[in-house]
Length: 428
Ligand SMILES: [Zn+2]
Image (tube, rainbow, N blue to C red; front, side, top):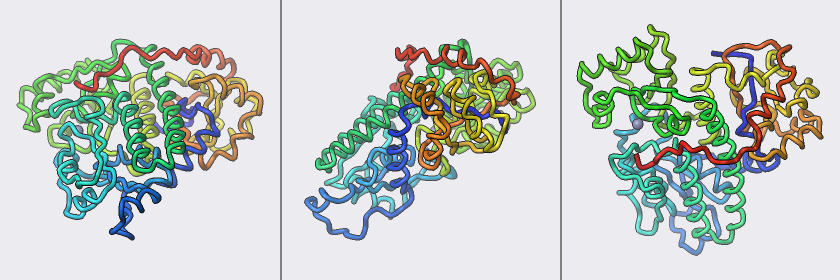
């Protein structure tokens, strides 16, 4: 799985300078586990209107988005911020409740996922709820952060709440939203392109954490119904249901198994074991955002790439070229890169590579910029702050294969901006 065939992700394709701002803002405010502004507990609302907004998010997925969108104008605390808890059975501490009740803005997921958060809402707190944004009810699949519709709706709703709380920073909030939307659009294009190029892919899941993500990617859910129902009701799976799940895997009737690492049990261990013996690829997906993830979209982008690696390892790699040249030396290959306007990163990093991939950007402008500017040199300085994402390809490719890749790229980058038709239904 570890490969040298590193390919910069298309998600970073939007304007690099814009992304720099975006990254700087995001990094400056990733305070998932910090204390909220407790230095002046007696703040009045007038005073609050000038300082950073105190935001408490029930879960770090939405907390990360809130931090990105708020920059220095917010102080975000996420209550559930580790992948080591059972998110569905999380019980807040007294101090968590206190944080929630003091927050100016509480961000919750809803749909029964974190009802403890809304119960603790203070009288003067305003609530932004993902379930409300998309109209999801308790009983619906609650893993809304994996839904592109929910993400976009939440980004707008959070920004609205920020503007209400701190009107003097309206323009800043609007700008951050715009920047975020560019990144989201690139991510959606990347997933949409994959969907257009693949049909009839199926998956099964030990727990439906990635339901919306798989729907966005065009996968059909083949998880045996009985098993899925028992998981949904948090009950034990009947032996017969486990057996049909195992048979499904043994017959290799699915393209990939999604394994929720935060909801592991004897049953899920048995299922993943069967997948291992049957050569069915397993992709681990957690509920919460891993600590090392840079942002909500960066994490999702990586998951998308991992899923692509599992079902079609060469997808997106044809255009990939010289990643073989490995660690760091790519930077010297500016001439090659300009051929396809494709940044290419050092092969061993998973996130922080230096260059933006321009080829499938939402707009074609980046490609032009890079071609003009002999790319790698200009992006060198962005290395530290630009959130770039790599497509790590399973199959290592020889660097000699890289020529003529621009045609591949243009196939998938014909700036077709029509939204893909397989919109997931967040209400499901
Ligand atoms: Zn779950």
